[in-house]
Image (cartoon, rainbow, N blue to C red):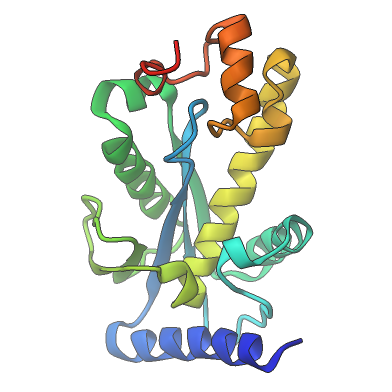
Length: 206
């Protein structure tokens, strides 16, 4: 493994250790699925400990699909607490995608079996939580806990879209996971929208 990768991953662990020293038990929070044209938006919250023993945590975008799936299982086994939550297509349409993503994050934090004292949230928007916390821009490349949440949210949403692909095989959701690829847009033109498409995202397509 490249030295810069090892150093980055160690820096993420060290970042979390310092946050624990300052704030005590905290959770990392991230979402997946704000951009797609179809499907629910997912979020996850994860509480790790200094001695959790999970190696290889990294920005989910830097990991292969196989590695994300391996870490998905390991995080669920070794994290002190974790929760994956969603906001539905109906909620996305009612309150808009940003607010729906914030709602999914709130549900994930509230669903943790252990109550954190603080939350580190990826991005620059902080959801309405009953605990204090902070946003961390590019948090999934900064904090191991946010990276763990990112992996849970990403893999869980991908698995959900594979299930939707069985229900609506004509859209090839297993390939693009609902994102607006050229293939997906062409299939929308051919078949129209299905119940899991987000109408407000389709105005320039259909």
